[in-house]
Image 1 (cartoon, rainbow over the protein chains, first blue to last red):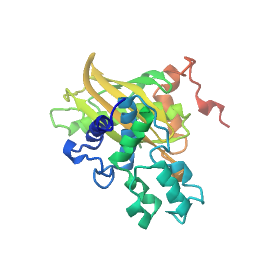
Image 2 (cartoon, rainbow over the protein chains, first blue to last red; image 1 turned 120 degrees about the vertical axis):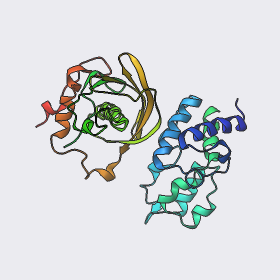
Image 3 (cartoon, one colour; image 1 turned 90 degrees about the vertical axis):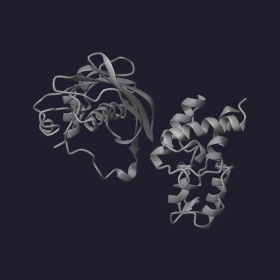
Length: 127
Length: 170
């Protein structure tokens, strides 16, 4: 089974390719949007490339649980509720949600994603 | 008016692959200025042709119900950009991924049997929030796919000829 470091190195290759960043810019704690400049369409590209590289399938909502955002239990007035934040923490156990929790507007949801979350997702898929 | 940078499909297999051709002609107006005395097809328009050919392939997979827009070109390299009147470009498209939120295709371009470009395109599939923003005027899309020959050469995943959905509409 691939180690976390091995998975990270391959995830980094994907990010260097998809986001046109230098290898040394990609660290485990780098956030995809703010640190690496990813836009929403890049996330789709990254998912496709991760699937290809690791021969895995990443379903919609596995990266960001978007399908639950219509539920008023989780989102009210454009912000995640306490239940929504708990749901997010469960969906992204490796994510650092502290800053996002201060103003949890759903437009900023993608900003919580970091390289660590991708590594965790791939690692989980690979078992 | 829309500009189209492919002429017609020669192969169209729903949801999996297509081949389209673009014949460059001296009568294309932009070639008068690009460049004076030396007409050469702008590469940006070749890319647009690749995206149009691939986009309709994805669009047809959803029976023309989804809004498909070019999202990103993650990789693309040309080995020859000297594309002149008389050349026939062949766009070969293979669908790599296709799912509700987006799709990705690989595209190769050949001229005279020689590959001149290789790349990939990511399409975004717009959600319900864009339902009231049509990408085409009434009837334009039907005319477009018919003119491209989708229903002349197109086959379903099972190999059955594609049926023009506009023929069964009220």
